[in-house]
Length: 136
Image (cartoon, rainbow, N blue to C red; front, side, top):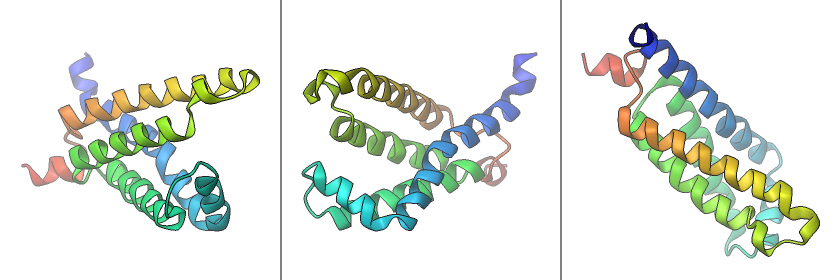
């Protein structure tokens, strides 16, 4: 039975993962100044460039996951991006005690997302995708 659900599960999984990135990228566009300010507050050099890179990765990667285009590369790029962002922005070990629980939760959630993205990078998008259509 589960084999018959491979394609719908792959599609739903891709869309759910994309829901983390696409809205975040779009909100960075509409709140660009705030995004740059937050990135700068973390000591990231060239925060405007970092914000633009984040927007491109989140929006393009999110759309690529939804349609299943170059899915393995998109998932890998989003996994690396998420790893870097997690270490830089959810470094719970360096925060005041009252902030550590929430930041540790976000840190661990992001590592689970990275796991899902790496699984997608390993197995691909499934047949219900642009990648699946082009491989036939």
